[in-house]
Amino acid sequence: MPCCCGPPASAPCGGLHLPRALRVSTSPSSLPAADAVLCVGDIGLDAPAALLARYGLRLQHVDADAPIPGSFWGEPEAGIIGCDVYVRDDTPVHSMLHEAGHLIVLPPDKRAAVHTDATDSVDEEDATCYLQILLAAQLPGVGSARLMADMDSWGYTYRLGSTRAWFEQDAENARSWLLARGLLPG
Image (cartoon, rainbow, N blue to C red):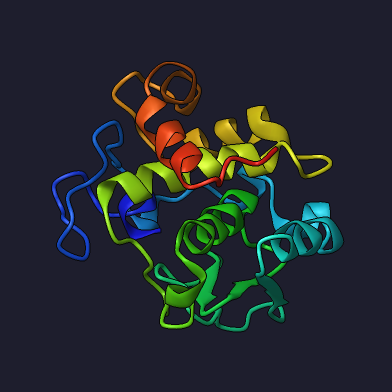
């Protein structure tokens, strides 16, 4: 999540520069209230757990107010360790899907070494952002349109002005990256 979802646009993360189409102007202290975006508690755990299981991932529920293991930004943002995605009820759905996306785009043999930060490249980060939007379409009560609106509310910022504009007009590199690896949900 560090490249797509957090550091100021001027800050590199993990030695990487932010994705070509993506610039973030949000810091963790300026995130919207949890009720401004759809949270895991709003949709339940069954559908997300089943979706992640299709990719060999496990959804791990964390008790309210407990620290979330593997969370780059801390609570309430999702965390990743190995093949596990950690969430609380107040974790934004977009955060859960983004972190899951990071694990999905990694070859399975690299997943075991992941702890907190999984970004290897700008192209991989772009693909993760694109994939989380596609995954949202597979969750009842979420959908791509809602997820893109939540991404905008949270602070994702794209050169075309919105997540939807990026997804529809400027994300061909991300789509191609996923397609080349057989990772586009069907």
